[in-house]
Amino acid sequence: MALHVSERSNALPARFSAGNPLLSRLAPMMLITGGAMRRYGLEAGESAPLSGSLGRLGSLEVRLARGPREIWRAQRLRYRVFYQEMSAKPDVVARMFRRDADRFDKACDHLLVIDHAAKGRFGGIKPKVVGTYRLMRQSAANRLGGFYTQSEFDLAPLLARHPGQRFLELGRSCVLQPYRNKRTVELLWSGIWAYLEHHRIDAMFGCASFDGTDPDALALPLSFLHHHARSQGEWSAEAHPEHLVGMDRLPAEMVDYKLALKQMPPLIKGYLRLGARFGSGAVIDRQFGTTDVLVVLPVSAIDRRYAQYYGGENSRYAA
View 1 (tube, rainbow, N blue to C red):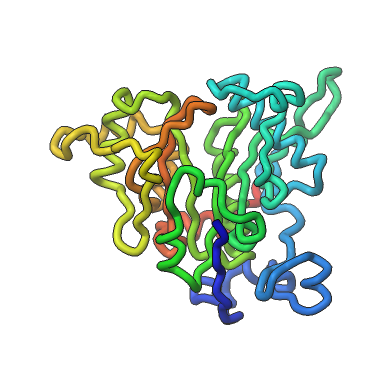
View 2: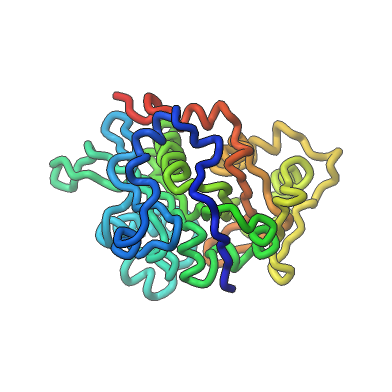
């Protein structure tokens, strides 16, 4: 499905005020025209590529992948986590090259967390990609024919209700097991926030997953999302009818709030804290061995505490 992006003014929304220190640092790269647009292969009103470091915490750095070699390293990390650690089933090509790759990778930006103090097999220092997020802007999805998420969820009505806004798909998030801690996750989100600011993103969405393909075993957390965190009104969206699995498996009065949160994967719990809501209906992904839900997160809905924290320069550069 081809997606439509409306023309929009170059005037910055109120949240990108001149006093924002992150905007001040990135402002020279923001809006480009003419020859520069042709050089970068951009559409009207798009921003130049975001380069340089987006944050550091000790030996960890977050930035975008620089070229095919680093995208390959992100794909290798995804294979290690999704196929070797979790229950995803690789096809012949994925197994041969030990990479999780698809046709969307070429249209996306790949956010990386790199440990510059990691050691190689012979004991020397060898920087290693330990975390990644795949970021796909609406303009890139237009050129490719749609978002990855649209294979499971019907986004057309949601996008049509917001013709003047810019959407970003978040996906393929994973972190190497020894690095699954608050520092790494916060660094990833600091990088995402810098990306949102730079490209003037208005809303994010993407698939988030529960491990396992039995929705009855996930009845409590799915029912919690349905009754207490469902996207509604202009931000509503639902799974394609042929894939839809009901999330309202328990009545609202039977949902134990605290127990439901304990059963949430850390990523979904993190989205909830930020202010995200979730689409109607889940989808079973047999290849990855997961039950997927749709995350919908307008930037304006993000809790101001988190916006100030992730957008602050001091939070992204610390010893």
